[in-house]
Image (tube, rainbow, N blue to C red; front, top):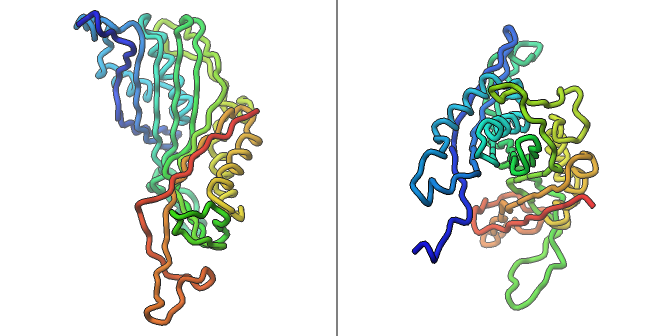
Length: 320
């Protein structure tokens, strides 16, 4: 059998590590909640081919490293920075581990506004929708522990939006399979998945014995639009919502492209922008049997939400 097969790739780690962190600054607290996945690659072949576990960093240890870094990392409140810190620590600490893949999903907690003056409460929060902030980081040490590269992408998932006008769909191919009617005004709704990538960056290796100290620019010193700029996500999200709301959409495809163009134009470090936009269909209810017009776009007011089947439009917009 050994003549017929070989191990061509291997990756393992810990998934669904749930982390909640409270950062206390006097009576004011800031919270983050993450779902973390960490996968490792390296000289681990014998654990598969020879049943030799001496090369395995236990997945329970990976979980414990994640919790420890969540406690001690000064970068915990920014998921891109925390993911780079976590992955760099692991690749630097274990000589035989050459790549770490860290995925973080951040849940939304927003401050509760209270009192007559409507001030944010210092330590009370509410879950602000199902939208999730996402980060994917690859820490690559294959060229050497002193030549670590980081590849970072980020975005949002499950950002549910709807506009009740300002969207049309006409002039598409009509043939013997076409039942869909052209419409010059319709409901446009989708659950936005957005992902943007940055150019690879070099990471200076940790100098301390425990491999915990990495060099990351301070937040107020980060280059605008770069991977270290913590405001990129807010700008990308705002652009996405503004274009969605204001564009007189000729199609989901055309609106998607405008979103991607603006994100690249306004964030110098972003190299690619990808969207996946599944249609959330709202079908006007046919009331002609009662002599009521609910199908003409200007008179359509009662709709049936339809979950499936649904269109799915995706694309990547890249910097030239």
